[in-house]
Image (cartoon, rainbow over all chains, first blue to last red):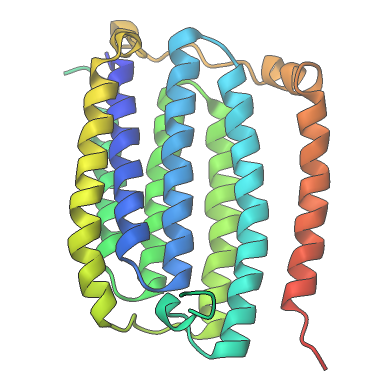
Length: 100
Length: 169
């Protein structure tokens, strides 16, 4: 017997680790991966809630989250390639033209 | 301990270890591979929750398409080891307590929620799977407009990626 709260706590832990990775990582590709990790954690919470209420709507939302993540990854990685071509670095601290 | 609980704990352990490996590894390719590990573990958890379609989509789209794109870009850009700067050391001191606080707050809130006491895999057996037929019916009736909107979103994403990645002469 697995209570829903176990899934929710796992989802929270994964989201927290995603936030930590997002903050402490310096490589722009790894930061993207941290965002994907957070999206995955949210998906787990969606599926767990769908199971808790026996409603399929949560699964539809997971489907949409995956689609948006795919679109985001395509555009984001194109931006990464452009940054690499223009700046010759993947470190976010060297991409600071907009920084005050 | 029933079988679903054992499967849950094994997969949860794999997912958390994968997420920690993502943080501690210095090479982006190692981070990508550990993220694939997390996604595989989550796919098993989706199966445990009875969401077969989502588990399949998780493996095909996430672990298959998106992560292959990541690994491909890492390979193309020849991304090596992350460099250390002063800011990254400060970020570690700011980021770890912040993330820890966020994690504890969310875990506490979610463990206390009333809905959390609902049991997913009752009686030690597997749950009745969500019907993929019902899911697709819902997708093409109630959520038809968002579904069509995502096709436009994907189209714009393709155009955006093409425009951004195009070399200027």
